[in-house]
Length: 452
Image 1 (tube, rainbow, N blue to C red):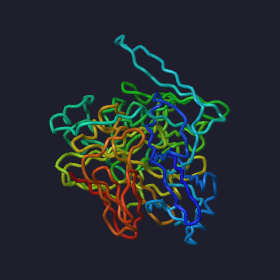
Image 2: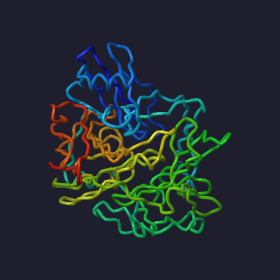
Image 3: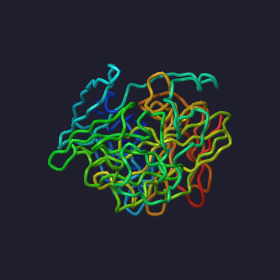
Image 4: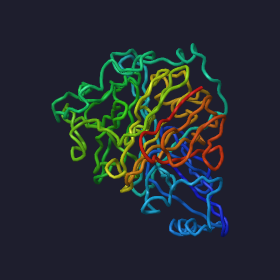
């Protein structure tokens, strides 16, 4: 979930979007409160805005009336589109004003059969808490990878199909049967259901799953979530999340079983040794298409990995779209009217754009300071659709990292304006800034074009 604070000055005033504020949601990262008047973030979560005029909060209605009467305007033309829909206070597209949850985290070492230890992170939530947000200290600089270093950085588990290969952009298994109904309660929890659409992510070491959540429930609410790690698999009682092919998105999450503090839960569930749907009212299929009309094109000279946040679920950037030079793939766009709602509020999707040269098997997982991949990727894409309009953004992954993307990213198509990143600047029709830019689609298909 992200934070956006919008500041205004006096009559003929200016509305300023604060610096984009992006979080990695790994539960054992640094956890601290943020000042909503000075930070902006974009991550899975609800959409809300905070407005300040001369140091005093004002309502969205006052903002929109002021803009309509030409009494207010946005600084540098950075209009986030808050007054363009039928309801100015409508909450969506993941721009969110929030506070940080009170939560406690503990780390438990669990012996394995080889006498080594595995670390599992447990986060316990108070029922009265607000949504938690977690992030790690940013890395200030990095070097673009050479073709050899990108291919050799890190290591992926041995592949048995799916996204385990660092050289292939097409999964060797999974993604088939995407339009097939899932046979509820017949497939063993030990079998990844790739024949029903999901793409196995063998590089994560979790049996193909994109995320695992072991839940503890009290008074009908999830008050403890143990997040699975490499070496674990989908076992009894777990929520087991999965990736879908490009253009498709996960359809399953338990609407009546979310975190007590707002933490999201997603996937299908292992019960009695079998896999069960958790949201059959939405679909009997595991993967459903987005609204369409958005794609990414790789015009660079190396592989490009774009990673969607696994949301609802572990909120890790593990859902891959990998593009070899010259390739184009669809990006799934959730419809605010039918997709996951967070505490009654609609949500959109966030993608991480990794540096040219890193494949999905390396980039679409948790990163670390010093290497700008995963949650440390320099750039985020935000996509969402509501009331027939699709909104698209390119923005800096701040404050997680101040690293600049070594390349160019431009949104092309019949759009409401322009949005392009180059040399640390995000430029629209009214000028450039170091934070980000947003446009909507007027008609046809919009393309994120990535080049050197």
